[in-house]
Length: 375
Image 1 (cartoon, helix red, strand yellow):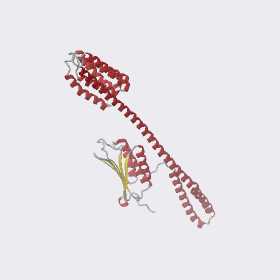
Image 2: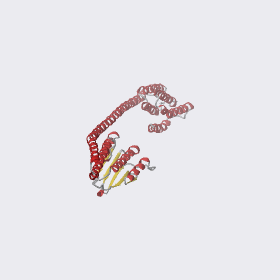
Image 3: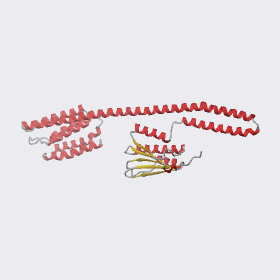
Image 4: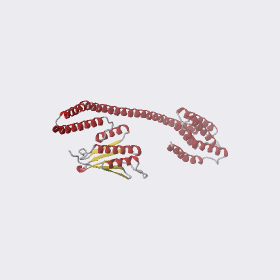
C-alpha cells in the first residue's frame, strides 16, 4: 500500500507541471480548488476500508477540476483530459466497480458541462469524447482483470491452506500409526520377554534359598544377570513410548515435514563415514536438536527458504555436521537463547559449535569427538 501511495504522488508530480503550462495565472477560486484537490489526494488512503467516503472524495476531486480548468477564453485546456484520466485511474484502482462507475458518471457529466462552455469544432469535440471513452474502457478492463486476479489469488490461498492442512493431517496420521506400532512392539516385549524374565528371577530366588552355600554365589550372579536383562528390557519398552526420535531417522522426518509444510528446499548429503560413525544415543540426539534449531532459525529470520545439510566423519574419529543458508546475515546478528543452548548441548557430549556468516551465507558447523565403544 505504501508503494502504490507514493506511485500516485509521483505521477501527480509529473502531470500537474504539464497541466499548469496551459493555465492562466491562478485566481483565488482556482487556487482554493487546487489546494482542495491536493488535500483529498493526501487523505484518501486513510479511508481504504470505507469505499463510500472514498467515492465522495473522488467525486469532489472531479468537481474541483471543473473550476481549476474552467476555460476563461472558451478554449478547452487539453491537459484537463490527462488529469481527469488520472483521477479515473485512481478511482478504479481504489474502488469497487459500482463506486468507480459513480465517479466516472460525475466526471463525465462535469466534462460535458465544461464542453458547453468552450468553443470547439466538431472534430475537436469528437476527439475529446473518443479519448475519454477509450480511457474509460481501458481502465474498466484493467479493473476487471484486477478483480479476477484478486479472486484467483483468494482461491489459491484457500487451496494452499487446504493443502497444508491435508499435509499436516497426513504427517499426523503417519506419526500416530508409527507410534501405535511402537507401542504394540513395546507391549509385546513387556508381556513376553519381561514376564518371562520376572518369572526367571522368582525361580532363581527360590532356588537360591534351597541351594547349598557353594552354589549360592553362582545363583546370585545368574540372578544379577537376569535383573540387568529385565532392566534393559524396561528401558527398551520405555524408549518405544517416547514420541521424539533423534538421529538420522528423526532428521529425515524433520526435513520431510519442513519441505511439505514450510515449502523449504533442503539439500541433504551424507559423506563417507557418517553412516558408520559410532555415536552414542545422547550424541545423536544432540546433533538432531542442533540441526532442528538451525532450520527453525532459517524459517524465522532468513529471507531464503533454502538450506544445505551435510554430515561427515573423516577417519572415524570425529563427526561433523553443517547447516548452511545462502542468505546475507544481518550486521546486528548476535547469538540468542537457541544458539547458546545448542552450543551447551554439544559441549556436554564432547562437541563444539562454530558460527560463520558473511554477505553470501550463514553457516552453523558442529563437531563431536567419537569415542570407540567397548564390546
